[in-house]
Length: 108
Image 1 (cartoon, one colour):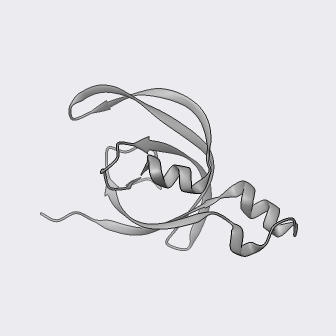
Image 2: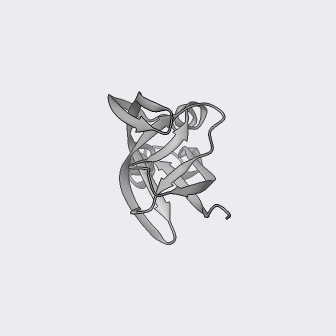
């Protein structure tokens, strides 16, 4: 059985707003485009730390989670605008371990 993936764009909302106001050039808006695994167990879009740093997202809080390996804690970041299949919405992004592929919840 294969994994389902989708192309996901994540944009720094603050940068996007500044660009819309003319305060910064549109080409400086921080954004990434990744191939994300659709995960029925995910609650948030999950990105590796390097991608979150590249986007310049703001730390929100740490949350408890359950993984296949048992309970853990992960950091949440705010300030992301997620674009998926022609839809865009603000969403908190969860930091995932380095080396883990980006994840997107089925309800996104």
